[in-house]
Image (cartoon, rainbow, N blue to C red; front, side):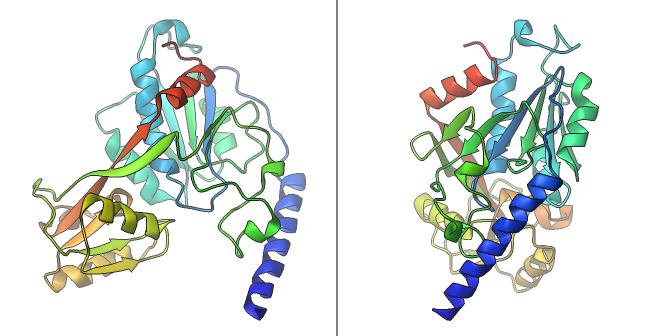
Length: 298
């Protein structure tokens, strides 16, 4: 009981600091003049699926694009898309770069200041997508797509460290699109190693993501029952050492795409390292709403 009261007090202190920081440090900036700025966010502190959705969104925009919708100097060409990640999330930036290695029109940038970078890139891109930045009120004029499948916080007790959320609905304007459980579904499409061999039974599951429990559930839905499950912190800097330790024992491992991206090539190519590749299903009504808010034609 005492521990819970301490957490509630810390959540209250966090919220006061949050409000002061936004009032004095994150005042509203200037909207972009050319590119469409899109923020993919969530109330959750981590584990909402923002990064895989950002990858899906960039591919969706590319597939839906027509010359009539170009707003920058690149009319008549394929859409130029910049994806902005925070520099502390290098694993996410690396994963996105790997996904778009064959699409030179998509550039992934890790930056400490999404607002400043978006302003600098404005005339060079048709779309600038922020992987998070939901809390950055400087991003004026942005189209916000909020992932709400985990529910909406209602009170300060729902905020970190007492809860899993970073802010409350009253701290934000209404997003252009809200995606709930009926709008978007994340699942594992296939699991394979670098040689495209399927995952054997009973691997050790290791992940360093915002919501390890979702990875456990996704593995179960895919039909994989791990012999062990190890949850590391999100953006864990010791992840490679953990992988090396288990490979030295001859263990067969299954990890997430984001965790795979942070490994050096020799471990990515190791036959005992299997990757759970994620797929996203977005409902037809949700796709129509995204298409409309981003100015894309059907």
